[in-house]
Length: 109
Image (cartoon, rainbow, N blue to C red):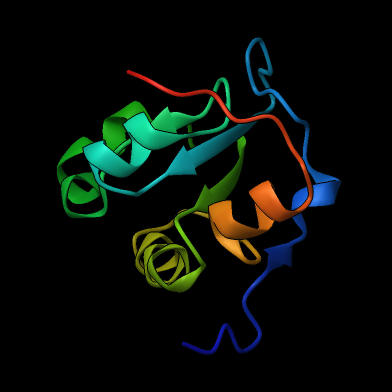
């Protein structure tokens, strides 16, 4: 999937831990089993298909980053979010890139 002119960010430009970060959100749109196998500490987990019904859980004023496994779902989610009035940035390469760069990964619920 092509991100085109969509806003993208490298994993190295993000905090390693989003716990206590108040001005930005890392939204993980992967499924529950993927989340349990490894995610960024402090990320918000809402599976892709549940996001439309849970938009009220996302702070409109925060800087919003979207991550998935490799980038495809996060690009689709950013396109959707922009259609409904959110500004969102996709994390280039997703959790694969996060792991490749040796960033910390938390497992479990």
